[in-house]
Image (cartoon, rainbow, N blue to C red):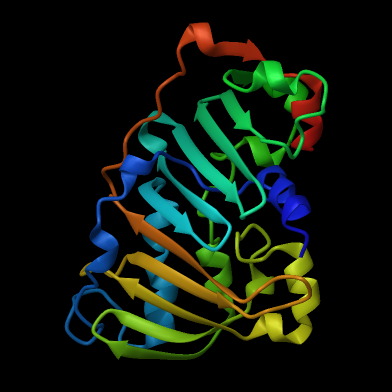
Length: 267
């Protein structure tokens, strides 16, 4: 997989990752009791994982994501109708950084694309600025509306519809295989990788953890080597259920209106 092409598509396809680095509360390392003893958690491992995503639907949580090429974090705060994310993408040859803030219908993006798109007109001037997105001009760009359909980077609710061979390996800890083609908006379902994997994409190994209330706290998807892409683990951590932080507007003196190139990138 061409890391440069993929990195742009990751942003343009919404890395779906709202947030700031301080959002991780550390609860992802504390799985809860097993389904047989925790009230309300299904005893069937597959059903327990399907149920574990219900807390995400409430839209009040924080998350982190790490892989070979991505390091990011974020939060969704439906009570204030806001979300935010920050992301660093790259490898040993280049890096790029991206930040998105959304409050109601207003969205701001800040990008540092390094050398990747440095030659594009106007990009250098935008490096340290938050570009304000005109909602009418952006149209129905899913990429710029994290609140439109949730913002779970793994799209776990959709992905868990394709579970197989699920077992509980320890209290609150599960393993099995998952069909990543079932989740169109997942960071684990890069189009090029899915195509290269072929039928293998329907049986990707994973591990998952839930807390004492049965809510998903960690998901590790082990993507095998495919095409130009190396084998890698994509780890998504979920925390702060019901206690996420509302997004804040960027400083007024750092805000400019979005460039035409930005709208084109997110189409």
